[in-house]
Length: 312
Image (cartoon, rainbow, N blue to C red; front, side, top):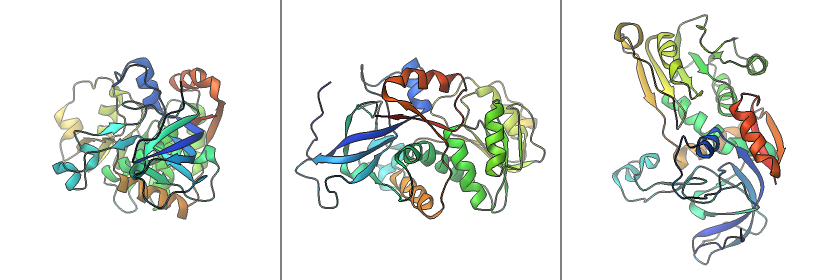
């Protein structure tokens, strides 16, 4: 493919590293029908600025290290944008779904949606922060975890292992339910109070829970594990079918079930500032650029502990 030319308000970025996100897998396998045929996946991009359009204002220079995330564009005028809820904008567009992403040597991004990156991290560590980290952070906000509360995490991949560290840094007690032995070991190493198989009950009632695994059959046990008034946030963009719920067992006593949709730029700024102030351990498994198919397969088969990244 030719090197893209930046539009008037865009930056041209030479890609250094691109994270491999489960959303890329959903796009590649057809769970999420592409918005444009032949679109290049990838939306956890760390790269350097090499050019820009004529309408880009001051603030960017040649060689600046920046990030490209999932949310690429919003209208800025609808009632959701005006209310600070741009993640719900009907006109929103996404990197690697609507527009070519970071599984390439070059990518373009509107300057208003480029992310400043915290110091103290390698490129391979920064890439997973740009979707896995940001979405995990928003899911934690949506889960409404009380101060010092008990958080359950279902699935423990790239996003979950970062959200767990944010919760732990804020004084939460974290319990992890996931199918992989390596992932359970990582959870305990990071400070989780317990780690068990995906469908096993946690040892204590939960104040909040986040479902990262795209497995609808985990919704009932996750709801049942909640204490009164608890919230389950579903963090994925795709979820297999949820079985029939029993009102008394799963929802009564003001238990809440809510979805998480993309993120706002404010979410991204808050999380990246947190990552700058609190050194997060990012478990990044590196693959060469021509191993993208293998990386996606390993992700699908549960062979990735933490996050996977492509090094261009």
